[in-house]
Image (cartoon, rainbow, N blue to C red; front, side):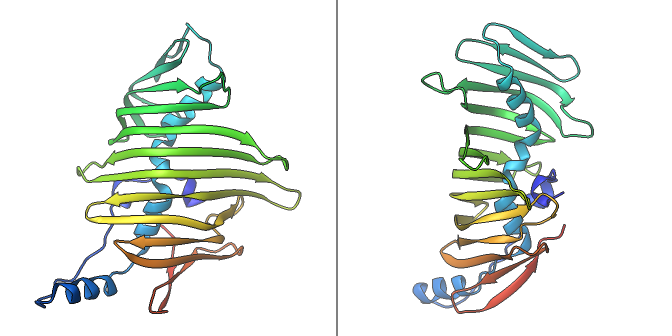
Length: 265
């Protein structure tokens, strides 16, 4: 299964980027040197791509309840959650449970608000200190589902979220993404498009997918696509390849330095 679909331990999300300290007195020169000495590593790329997975256990419950919604009624899974419906949405309360076998433990609650104009394919999830495996989720994610003429399923997601890790480190994310499930005769693929900003500690990452990221269902890693990444102002191009199923990505820095990294765990 692709690393995109795996659950992530809190520590694998921690961004490890060390900045050198300079003793130069010229502030402009300090800033230039600081930018030139920055690098982007495997952990940072994985963090940028995988933050959505932290809410996946709760999202599966939400999607199921949304698909089977009945205004004014209550849904229960005695082993995990209780859902209270209204005309405008529903709330889900979790009590130290796992929504799937060997899944993350869920605690707390979330609210779901239906889309406007009786849109049956849109809703917004509001997280208020929902705990997923010890990681706190706060903020909102708005979902819209659609189907392309070719039959592909598209999920547009607008995100404004903060994750609090077990060591109290915070990761915030804001922007939009489109996740696609493409079904073709020769191959089936999962795709990612979008642009968003992620902040972790003192680092800010601006992400712009310039060519859809693609991974075949049978492949463990993203095999195709490109994205422009700005880390604290340092512009880096990330190339995931030509479609070959491998675990590598190529980083291209402003000075034309090329670095190949592995996306293995």
